[in-house]
Amino acid sequence: MSVNDIGDSLSYREAVDLAEELLQEQGSHLFAAVNGWKYPMGLQPMLTAALFLTVKNALRSDHEKPADFVWPWPGGTEAPQVTAEERDRLRAQLDANSAFANIRKG
Image 1 (cartoon, rainbow, N blue to C red):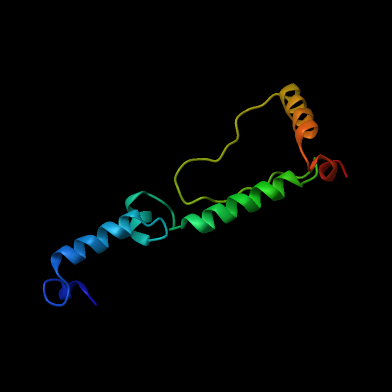
Image 2 (cartoon, rainbow, N blue to C red):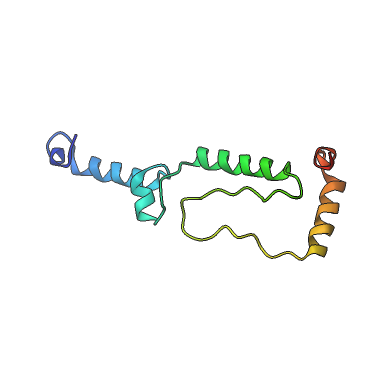
C-alpha cells in the first residue's frame, strides 16, 4: 500500500485514522520523529530497560560506576546532586527497610 492508494482502496478517513494511531504509538518512527526522539522505543522495551538498569544498579558494588542507558528522548539523565552524608543516610535507610539488603552487603 502506498500514498497513491489513498482515495481508491483506502479512504482519506482511514488514512487519517492510521496516521493518528501511529502518532500515539511510541514504537513508531512517526512518533519518534514528531517528538524529537533519536529512535522509536515502545513502552514494553522501555520498561524492560528501566527494570534491567534498576536491578543492575541495585546489585552493583560500591566501586562500580552506575549503569546508564541512552534513552531516545532529548535531555540528560543526570542524577540529582547528593552529598556524601545524604547518600550514607539514604543507604542506611534503604538497608534498614529492604528485603534485599543482605545481597548488597555481600
